[in-house]
Structure formats: structure tokens, C-alpha cells
Image (cartoon, rainbow, N blue to C red; front, side, top):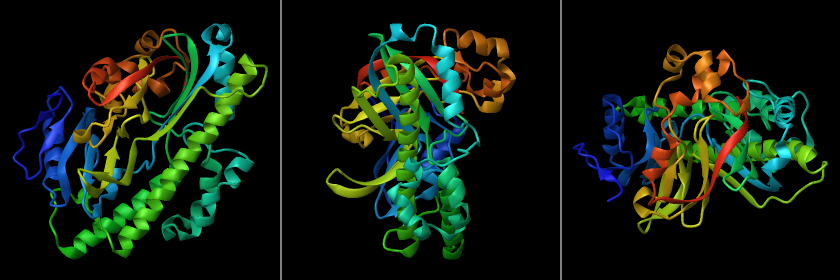
Length: 393
């Protein structure tokens, strides 16, 4: 059996694809979720599972008639996009630094936003629904407009990659920026207030939930879908800019047709059918891997990444991991590693090599090869990528 059933003495089983023992806090978090009466069948833990807020990052839970806002998380719709271009890596010689500088000039990173708003952003159809979003975000529409087409910080990145056959790939990782975070915080706060009013006890207040059929549920579900669409479109806009930059260097500015395009969430919730029943599936740091679904599983900024196809494994709720997963906190990584370590571990990658990205050093992450070996029953590998340029958020 590729997964193990954890012995946690809780009402619902916890199936784990990770080959490592959970730390005490992680075990408690898994038990908390599996003890909820509305959890459907079992909880699935992916190979990159680690501590989160409310629910473990790298966990998949299906629920009946309920949704837990904190389990979805605050970076609603965070995910990956990748494009395979019809170019050989040989054509990149001598151009990598220029490409990196052009990416950094064209796509805002960290907390930065676009100085001007392009038509692709203003013409997005979903702006028509903005007034229907939570009242707590109505004063930040301008910021949301300006951040559409921006990367964000943390572990978000843009990478120019080569596969094992020397084909050129573009890849990026980002989510719903400040607007997604703000919407999530508003609804998490409402869920906590309802929990207090109900005088119900939960093992963790971050597991406060909304019940289907209520106004609070309807409002959250609407805002969640809006933010997920924003995140996907945010990646589309950045990918279009990124593609133009690379085409300028490799095709004289002529537009090219991608050979493969993928855009997938890994922090989100959707209504799906599993084991013959309609349920709400929350993937917190997990990618949908239904049969033939394309997905992206990145390593760290010095490791391989993988384009995969799902195998439709029912026990995982047709899911797979979303990356390597951290083995060290950001603070610990900064204290443990030096700038020389970063330079050594990112050899051969055109990227910034300064103390501001030390917390993203490859050594702070688990081995992506080990993670992939633990999910052979979940996905098949379509392409193995290695970055030659990396822009961090």
C-alpha cells in the first residue's frame, strides 16, 4: 500500500503519503481535523505535509455541507503556471542575466504593485462583481487592480527552465495577492465570531466553519471563487509578460504558440464528487490530480521541478503534493545558513544572491526527489525541469 493509515484514535482515518513521522504539533493538527463530525470518509496527507494554520499544509479534506475558511488559507488560489516553448536551451547562451533583469523590471515582486494598469487588468470581467465582495475590502479595489500581474513575496517565484531534452520552459508561482488575503481574513473573523456565539467547542478555533445554506456560507463561497479566479488570471498576466520577454531574446519579438500550458491552484476549495457523493474538497498545499490533469510540482530554487499528469487516485481525493515542502522555518534557515551557502547551493542559476532571500535557500526544503518517490501512485512525470534563471518574490 503506497500510503499508511496513521494510528491517531480519531473518528475519521488519516491516510498519509509522507514517509516521515509527523512532529507532535503536526500530529495534533491532523487529529483535530479528523475529529470534526462533518469530515467525509478520511483526511489525506501529501508527501510534503508540514505545519499550517488550522489544517496541515499538504492536506486534502472533503467535507459535507461545510467549508473551513482557515483550512483554505489566506493566499486563496495560490498556485503554479508553466509554459513549454518551441525553443532549445542553446539559444539562451549569454542572455540569462539580461532576461532576469527584464523580468524584474516588468513584473513587480514583494509588496510592489504595477505603477500603471494595463488593459488586460482593467478589462477583466470579474471586476463587475467587486461590489458584491465582503464590505471589508471595498476600499482596496485600486490596490487589487494595481496588484493584478504582480508576484508577491515569500516562496513565490518566476523561473526560466530547461527540461532533460533541453527544451525551454517558463514557470511561475503566485496567488491572489493582498485582495485574497484580505477576503480570507474577513471571513475567518466571521467564522470565529459565529463559533463564539454558538458556544460550540472545537479542538482549534482556526477550524471555525460555515454551513451550507447560510448567508455566511454563500458570501464566503462567492468571495472564494472570485479570489481563486483573480489568482489564476494574475498568473496569466505575468506569464504573458514573461513570454514576451523570452520571445524578444529567442524569436526576435515574434509571438510563439506554447507546446504545453498549465495553470493550477494548490490552495483552494471546490465542489467535487468523490465516492459517489458531492462534497467540498479543500486542498491546502495540494494539486488536483484527476486522470490526465496536468499539474506542477516545484522543488526549491536550486532543485528540479516536475510537470506531471494525474492518475486519479481516489484515496487521495485525486490529489498530489504541491512542492517539496519546507523542512526548516524561515527564521531557522536565516540563522543556520550563510550567504556563501546560498551562493554554493544556487550554482548555475542566474538569480539574486543576497541575504534577503536566504530564507528561501534550497537547504531549507525537503528533497523533491524523495517527495516524488512517495507519490508514484498519484502522478506520472511528464517533464523534469531545472531552472537557469530564478526571480524570487
